Length: 360
Ligand SMILES: *Cc1c(COP(=O)(O)O)cnc(C)c1O
Image (cartoon, rainbow, N blue to C red; front, top):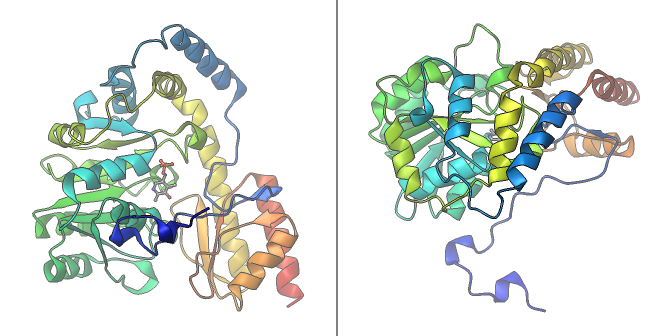
């Protein structure tokens, strides 16, 4: 038995820790922002039928260009986008990895604004891209001036935004994205994993794509679509972006089964998204109740809430775990993050919070 330290691993990977959200079997799992509603049974049935058909030709490699899936994704996004504007991979994490393989890498850098999605710096490290940590304004906002200032001071090859931002829930203004784009000759990525949970008056960065060939908007079926286990992420951008990613993707990276399952699910988009309104209701309920209990929840445009004002965050995390409820301790002092669950799960969390707060 040897240990990692004994292996001739790349010097820049020495001492790093892997992504490690705990995978505990707990009754109420509100820690990784999954959609906790199962998919409707009739949708499950049509996915199974599509998979059964596909299995008969699984001796062949899949469609390397996943045309039917790109058509379905473009139709879902609307706004005049076509298959040429769309690219997909096994989760939006793989999309981000392909983007950094093509546009980042050794000698290049990516600017992000922590606290943000923990995978952004990890994927940067994996691809040998230098991670530059910008600093947000108060309440986790990023003004156009702040974004431009960081870009001018650090000249990154890529800028990563996340909107609504994980773990804070903060939505980013289109003005900030447009200003950042104008300030850099590099690639600007907006990770919109939670776009479907946004407030209807907030337009998405998709509306900025026209005429901005270095702007990439990434999305996923993992959250709103309740499809985290199937692994399907995608992007919308100028068609030349897909040409760049074709240089780094592995051939046939999307299995025929993944493609078939995603196409079948997208054909039922309204039904798959029917839970989104309820999840938003639970999110708003968490915000209101936690504020009443004296905590400081941040306004969220996603399916989770970050809240501050916790005297001992790790202790509260442990006390909830003792009650079979898991939320997320991100190591931000005095803060915890909770995903909006079903009504019953959310009630269990809020009831426990109320009891633990009173007993304090
Ligand atoms: C959950 C999440 C993703 C999703 O990743 P997948 O690989 O598509 O499951 C991407 N970005 C952010 C910010 C997330 O929180």
